[in-house]
Image (cartoon, rainbow, N blue to C red):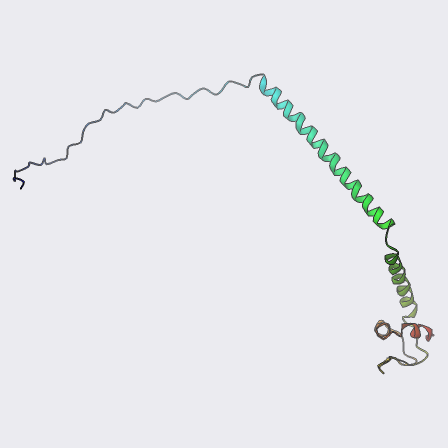
Length: 146
């Protein structure tokens, strides 16, 4: 059992005093001393390195450009015979197409399925040429025009 004894409480809380240091305005620190002789040397070394690296980059770009051009030239020179043949055939077909458009068919040409590709006397158009190609009647059409 704890004996009850009256405890007196102060009216205001007690705050222990801590010493306060006075605020002293300080003067700004002086700027660092100008660069010593090592700084310009480092700067010029860096400039030299940058120049060397820039030259190397330009040389590399030129070499890559030259290699790409050589590769394209080699690819064109060593084009497979089939590819060259396809290009020639494409040119021939284009020349035939230009020669046929505007002329007139001398006979009626029908596809194997029975559809009419062109009527006799009709003017040859791009559409008729396309139908002739699809029905494998292009040669027959080209032989029967005026």
